[in-house]
Image 1: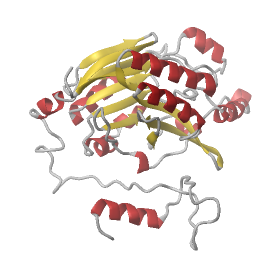
Image 2 (image 1 turned 120 degrees about the horizontal axis):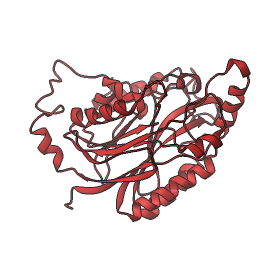
Image 3 (image 1 turned 45 degrees about the vertical axis):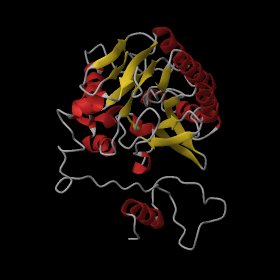
Length: 347
């Protein structure tokens, strides 16, 4: 492989059900080490992998059960950064790899705040950043708070400019363009890999179409990681009122929308594929959405990267909370600073 080539890995596995962040983090560490030993420089995990996708319903026949499940689930969500990311980071540092993981994230100072997040760890073992899902799908609105655009960014890395979105965010054209317009070269598409119901409804074609579409639209590589849950694990979850037809669909797609590896369905495994960044300018010879085929003079996108907080102190920060950022109301000074950084001059 040339200097612009490396191996990526999409991990298609089941977390430990129903809720066990410690053992599921162990799976992340073991799969990362295995993928790295097989030559991978980028390892991507599915949506909500830690501790699992919140897959149960509000059952009015047992109106308190879902709340008890949610409390236990929240106790098994993680801080980002936190002890669990540090543990994964040690493996990333030892193996010299980038790791991207979907997780349920908690806020330290807000007991009920739960986010559907995607975090990026570099080969130094540090958290590069995180993206909190902006557009929640279906039942996620019951469990998760909405994120903001502060994590809607692309990271410069030794494996290319790296970004990612979560599940049905791939049906939001503006979110996709926000990453594409930052020059994204490698996109991490993290999916739950479900459902597939007896009625015939399935998301297999949706995951396939959306992952390919992003590769074509952005002239980039897509590493799609999706959950698979075997029947034995589903039975052990014992959450009731939930479909566990998590079929997977992980794969690696080139800028022409073709699978380099996968898709993998109906079993656990790690999908490996070669990413050759030199193929990107070849594809851009046909279409270049960030170059000659863009018209920023007439069509462009405004993104507010402000971090959100529930409280704004008019006379300065209250003691002890200066480094804590929640969600809700925004700090005007942060918005102003973001504009200054973007323009290079005070607003």
